[in-house]
Structure formats: structure tokens, C-alpha cells
Amino acid sequence: MRGFTLPIWVAAAAKAAAQVLTGKAVDAKQRIDFSNNEKSIFVPIRSAASLHSGKKAIGISNADSGEGLDLTRDLEIWTCLEFIKINQEQSSKKNLNDSDNWLQIIPGYGVGKKSLSNEISISEFARELLHFNLYPFLKKGYFLKLEIIFPLGKDLAKKTSNHAFGVVDGLALIGTQIDVQVSASPHQLNKTIDYLRRRCSEESFSGSLIFVIGENGLNLALDLGIPSNQIVKTGNWLGPLLVAAAEEKVKDLFLFGYHGKLIKLAGGVFHTHHHLADNRLETLIALAFKEGISSILIKSFENAESIEQALLQLESQDPNSAKRLWDRVATEVENRSQQYVKRYVSSSIEISAFMFDRNRKLRWSGPSAFNKMKSLGLELKH
Image: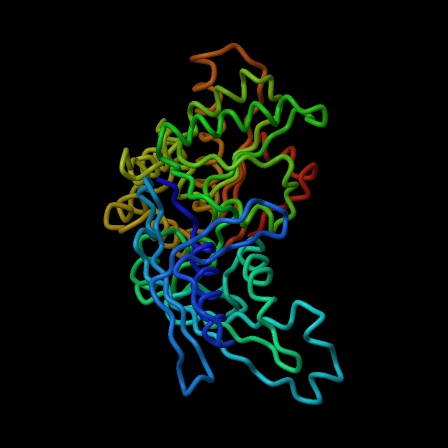
């Protein structure tokens, strides 16, 4: 069964609300169109209704991730839409009907916001999808205000690494495609390997690839200006993908990820889904001993609820030791990844590791990555 990403379900609910607001019949299955001429799809909604004597409208849908065990399965989505009259001052500054400013997207309860700006955490795909599907409902002299609400978003966000990407108060709306990718499934692994092989067979392929894990990693990589034509979103099957890259004669492979994911590779675990294995704290402790960190400081790790908490504890007590330890982790990610590839194939591939923290700062790199940062336009933050 086909499963759609969160932006698709939000767009369907918002379009149903727009139909109510403009007095049109509400379609049980909303037609969602795409600006890139992708074939239209039809997405079921749950309900839609008028609010405040017709001044507002609400559309409701329930996310369906298909066969995937996606966190958003059955998530209830509310979209509240209203027309706001453009006043003379706004009209004189810019014609809102002829710009992207005609649609104001508000993060309601349970929707993630960027911690630094308090703006909604939304991907370009999701933003463009809403603009493209709501524009036909626009009235002259008005702009549209869309508030998105995920009633269970705050609770579900606690089970994600959203905070690691500077997203607070709920689930980020950062899907970048139509269909849900099941990152832990063998089927998705095969699709990703096929995609990798196609990329490597292109005439423009330079021999360099960047692996990022999941939507959050992809979102941050693009924000940092990493070239999209070099990026492969990997999901959790990293081991087989490393080997596939080596088989395709990739020369430089960059691993770009949240430290809470990539540390698993430093401990020899090359499938990073939490259902399979979680060796993170044990790996951190083992590497701390190898790096010569004080046994008193290491002992405090045992009471940490996460490696993030262990890191913050160490940084507060001994910042230099914290940096040494995490540089060591990045180095081990590079070394263990190279060793993993050599088990299966003879290759000259060079693997480099970049890791970022919960504040979306690129903080650590292995020796190989450090020597190549300039080629990607990256720099470490301290």
C-alpha cells in the first residue's frame, strides 16, 4: 500500500479547508498537483467544516504511511484557513497576490519551530506544495493565513531527534518527496542502491558522494549549502551502502550526520535503526577510556539518559576533554567504515565523517574530513 509523507496530508487538509472557505463542494479525495509536472495524486481527507460564521474553515486528515512503521502513522492533522484583507500599507509595499507572501503559514500546536527564529520548520517541498495547491483559491485584495496543528505532535516529537536539528515544540514539516521511504526496510535499501548506481553512472559524476541519514540530515545538509547533486539520503542501512559505493568506484565518500547516529558506526554497528541495536553509550565510554579521559568523568556517563546528556556533562566539566573525545569518535567512524568496506571489496575509496550537534552546528570531523572541508564549503563551529 502506498504511503504519503506528512506534507502531502497537510496539503490535502488545507485544500479541503480552502474549498469550504470559498463555498465549493468538498472532495472526499483531494487532488494534489505538483509544480514540477509530477503526476497528480488523490489523497483522502477525514472532514472539513466552516468556523466563526464562515470566516474560517478547518480541514482534517489522518496521515497514512502505508507499509512503513513511520512515526506519523495515523497522525491527525488540522489545518485552519482564513482570508486576511490586505490593508493600504501592505498593498503599497508589495502586491501580495503576485508574490509568495500571499500565503502566511503559522505553526500551531504540535508543529515544530526553529528554535533560533521561532519560525515554522518546513521544507521547500512542503512550502511549494501548499503554495501551488492553494493559489487557485486566492481572492483579490486578500492573503491567506494557514495555521497547521498536530494535536499529538508535541508528544511524538519527544521520540524523534528533532531537537538535534534545532526544532522545538513539535514535529517538523520537512518531507522532501511524495512517498514515505521506509528507511529500515530491505526494499528501501534496494531502492537507494539503485539510485546510487544511477548517480554514479551519470557523465557528470565526479567521483564524490555525500551520505546523509534521513530527512533531518538532508534538510541541514542543504541549509549548509552542500551540493544536492552529490547527496544520497541513506536511511539506516549504511553498511551495504558503503560497500555499494566502493563497488561503484566512488573515490571520496562523506558521511554527514547527527552524532547520535554516526557514533553507532564507531562501535561497529552499521544499521543505525534503534530497533536493531543501541551501542551508543557503551561506545562512548570505551572511546573515552582509549582517549585517556578521567575515570571520574567517565563514571558520570553511566547515569546519563543519553549520549547528548553525557556530552553536555563532559563539556560543562572539561571542554577540552569533550572535544578530544568527540574528535576521537569521528576518527573511529572513518576508521571502522573503511574496515567494514575492506571486508567485502578491494577499493581505494576514502571515507570522511562530519558530525553535528543538537543545535545544528557542525562540530566534529575525522582527519580525512578535516582535510576536505574547504572543498565542500564547510567549517566546524565551536
